[in-house]
Structure formats: C-alpha cells, structure tokens
Image (cartoon, rainbow, N blue to C red; front, side, top):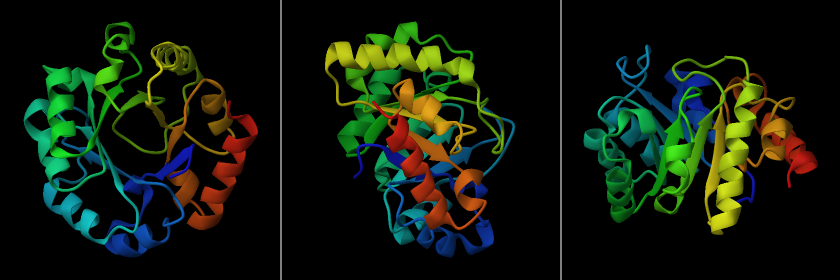
Length: 220
C-alpha cells in the first residue's frame, strides 16, 4: 500500500451500480465506506448487510467510517465483516480505548474520528491505542462540503504527537479534499485522504492519479 493513501468515498458513487463503481477505483488504496444512521448525523446511508456485500466484491480493502451513535455496541460488527479499517467517532464512544482494543483483537485497524469542534488534547496521549486518526475537515453527514483549512492546526497537533511518540499512525482527512486542497492537508501532516466527488466527478482512475501527483508535490 502507498505511503500516502487515496481512499475514494463511495458516498459520491452511483449506488445502483456500486460493483462497477468499486471496480473503477481499483487503483486507489482503500474504499472509504460512510455508514450514517440518521442519529449521530442527520443522514442515512447503509448498514451491515450492504457493507458485507461491498466487502465481498471490492477489489481493494474497506476503510469503514462509522458516523453512528452507540459505537461501542456496533463498531465491532464491522470488523467482524472483514473490514480492513474501522473508524468510529470519539463523540459517539463511551470507552474509545476499550473499543479500539476490541476492533484490533478482531483483526481490523482501529481508527478514531473527531468532528471539527472536538478538542484533540484528550486524545493525544491515547494515540498508541489507535492505528488511524481521522480529522474531519467538514461537519460529518453530507458529501460535497467545502474544505475547512482551520482544521490544519488540529491535524498538526496529531502529527507532532505521532512524531514525538514514534508511532505508525495514519493521519486521515475527510471533507472537501480536491487537487487544490489535498496539498494543504499533506503539508499539515496528513497521509491518508478521503475524496468523494473529486474522484467520482470524472474518470476515477484519472482523478486518483491527479490526487496522487498533488500529494507528492506537497508531502513531507
């Protein structure tokens, strides 16, 4: 897998032709699967049965992003479906460390996501418990929003803590990532990039290549 990962979000894909849409992004690193429950966020997407089928047919591993309430109860089930990575929201987990350990025990990478308004400080000392931190660069719930550059200081706090602790930790950004904004996030320390309309708004293979080139020009 690449040092800098491009994870297309199928939130921007054609859900009726999802298998073909997955095949179209086989040059990406992982497929970002947004699970929304209409409780934690005001939108509804898919649940375990659909994710299980995506897992069965996808040519690349699944990066599942759970925007759901009661993550402690539901997140382990997505690891059991075979997802490569399962990310839950800090704001939706009562015991994030215990949950991350359970996800890892099942065999998936454990990620924690933070909404734009969530303070990173309480999580900095917990970073060894996670494989990925997702800094939301939009408010979670809907695709097509504008990138929030004021989230870059938060991203840098995690990047600095990662370096200080010497961790093999992926730093992911999600929201408004395009060829114009991906370099800003890369310079702030991101190495894993979720892109929806920036990939599916044209020929996915070409769009993925352009995003990779933009990252390479700005990455540390």
